[in-house]
Length: 368
Ligand SMILES: [Zn+2]
Image (cartoon, rainbow, N blue to C red; front, side, top):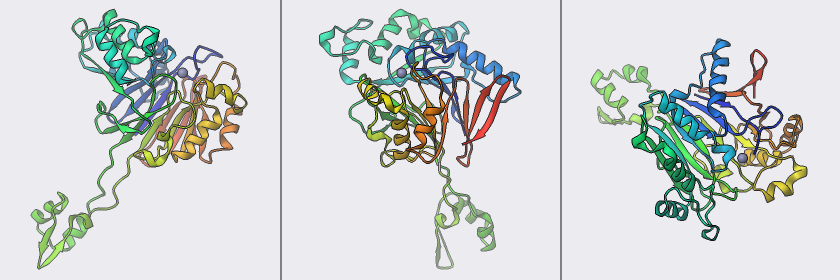
């Protein structure tokens, strides 16, 4: 159902062989990129080649990207976007592309009045707000009329903490929910869910009752029937609806947004990819810079009732990942993984999550 390829697990800058943020999400409704730090296109190409040479069918082909979801405007999450869009132009892409991310009404208004400009400090608008960056990037040369393909730049005004359904749904059969986060600039996480399927229609039972093909067809379409004075409800011929699968990506955030409470989400995610910039001994620093510790990530996983937690976005202070996992396990009883660059996760139709750990000649599969 979902495959998440994590191609950068470092925060702020390259460290210990780790790249900055950027993930590829394969969904039944097409391929999406979540965050796009420096060098993302090369990482996708290299990863795709490695998948192919390992004989795997999974792919991260840039040309197949339908939409790019940015969690916020900081450059370690966005600096690879423009070069990637330009490569697609050089390749003669025709299909439209959606690029979306969070902003505020004030910043959107300001950028509309001052296209391509940087806001003065007294405006209170961050120069890394996506409304400002989108406007500047368009001024640099990705305007629709210059490009071989249309780009739909979508700014989502964030107003409060409550998750809400994205006004743009670029992946067919997938519902995207915006989860506002706390990061000093407008920021959000994303919750992706496959649409729930109707339960199985019990054709045998309908046939046993001696109904005509036409009557069976009506029941299957959801129409109730009156037969010999008795009402047969269509719903009674349907099994339990098949719940959707879901995955959530935190973006950068301090602990505490109400969107990490299961009551405010469409469904508990099978997999939560959450930042863990620090360990708990740096809790003060994490709060000050609007980031999470492994404990914070685990507390969010517990409150959103995630089945599994994958950690990412490590500070350069963190070299070994095992302490992050031990710390997270103290606050979360589900499966925990510390992601490394090039790892990927699969969620199957039953909601089971597997972690494919990058090793020298391919990947080792672990169930979470
Ligand atoms: Zn970051």
